[in-house]
Image (tube, rainbow, N blue to C red; front, side, top):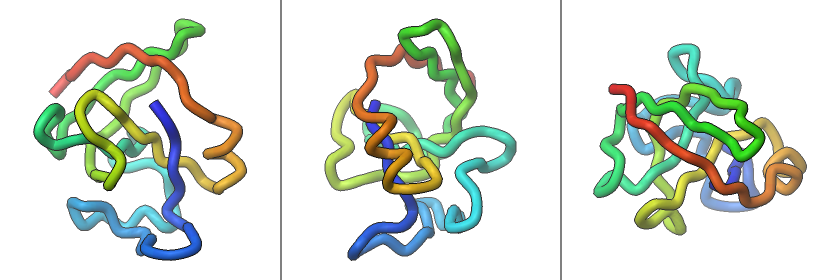
Length: 97
C-alpha cells in the first residue's frame, strides 16, 4: 500500500472516480478512502486493512489511480508530506462488503 493526496501539482481534482469530493476529508462514511484496481476490488467495497504492526482500519474503495493495478492499493492522506511519510507498506486486506 502507498498513499496519495487529493492535492497535487497537476491532474488532481479532489473528486474520486465514484464522484465523491475528498478535497476536505480523508474519510467517507466513517471509513478511510482507498484507491483500488476495480477489476480486483469492486468500487464501493468496504474493506479492513491490517498493517504489519497489527493495527487495522476500515476503508471504502471509492477511487482508482493510473498506477494502481492488480493488488496495489493507495490510501488517501491529508498532505503530500503525509504521503511521503507513509511510504510503501505491506498490508493484509479483507473485503467486508
